[in-house]
Amino acid sequence: MAESGTRFVVKRLNWIEHYNGSWLRQPGEVAVVSFATFEEADAERAKRESEMRKKVNPFACGAAVHFWSHLDEPRLRDWLMDRGIDPPAAKNDGTTDWAGWWKKSGKKLSPEKRESVWEALDKMRFFMVREEPVRPVGYAVVEVHWEYNDNYYDANPSCGQLLKVYRLRERAEAECARRNEEAREQWSADYPGTGEPEAAFNPDEDMPAFDMQDRIRHRRGLSAKELQRGEGQFSSAEGVPFFEIIEVALEGLE
Amino acid sequence: MSRKATKPTAKPKAKTAKKSAAKSKPTKKSPVRNKPAKKPQAKRVATAKRLGVFVVQQKTYGVYGDTRYTDPDRVFADEKTAQQYADALNRDLIALGSPFASSDAGSRITGGDKALTALVAPLKLPLPNATQWGPALDWASWWAENYFNMTAEQRNALCLALDKFDWYQVRSTTLE
Image 1 (cartoon, rainbow over the protein chains, first blue to last red):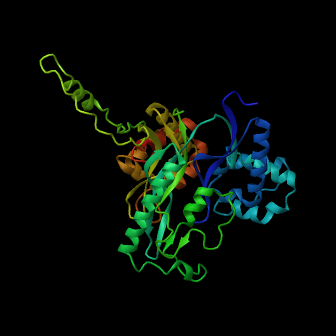
Image 2 (tube, rainbow over the protein chains, first blue to last red; image 1 turned 30 degrees about the vertical axis):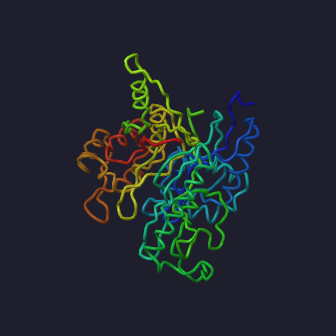
Image 3 (cartoon, rainbow over the protein chains, first blue to last red; image 1 turned 180 degrees about the horizontal axis):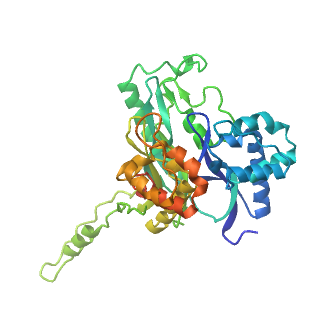
């Protein structure tokens, strides 16, 4: 049971998708759900971790062994062989195609052997449990950076201009709505030809005027389900979130 | 790595209002005989108290090289606690290999490749090769090849020497 005033929080570690499709872990973590007992939290963590392992090629998450494991390559090979797993052979240039090996052979391994591989790859974790004090939540209003990429405006996935933090969601929402309304008017006045009316926009055929799919993916994390058709895409300034609210933990501000 | 944040802008206290109230206090020499009726005052709208607070963000760059900061995830009442959080994130950054993940680590230190090479020399490790794109040294490949030949302390020392690297830093903002 958690101590008085604390909870066991399941945290999603901050994995991001690199522009070349590989995954990289960045510092930071996001609270997903919390429990009164460690056992409950750990069961939830294990369930989510297991789901991720079905989707992820761990050897594609970083370009070298040190991204995956505290074991160096010879020790990683030994570990696998000790558990009856044949590691991939090194190529003539000394490199090893671990990602290709996992893609080809990973599914053929028994569940126990697959589990052994993940055990060795101790840096490849997607969730963790922390006992943390119950903290109040604040609501940060941030301006989204819309950057033109020669075709359309793309929302910066991880950065925004922080304007102010509010204790009350209602105040943050009011401020955000006011700023969005102003920004949409301004964008429509400055760029009247931006895109087609929303009703005529077909995401399968038309290029959006504004696209924030990378930002949504980054926010939801790699465990999130796929984006819906046209989600986060806009054909005009109408409906575009130029300002957003981000929930933040308030520490020492009870 | 410990950088001082700029001071938060706290709302100034209403000192002037107090002073003027004191001045208008009636004295013996100038008694107020006919006190005028109080003007009806407009009902005050409740305004939330503003506080200077601290956030931790990493500096990055937009597509045109303009400065950007990562979205914050936590707000702190005091700068010291915020700095501890920034230091923890920077330790994670090193542990995850990020400062050397791109090949241009040499440009993230005063003195460039030469300065970084001088730091590496005492470790008695092979020096990095030039990248295939130019004369700069390929520190990303070097890091991957030599990661396990260094202790955690040596890795930390090398990373922390990158004084031009964009570490997580404490910044100030307002909580209302």
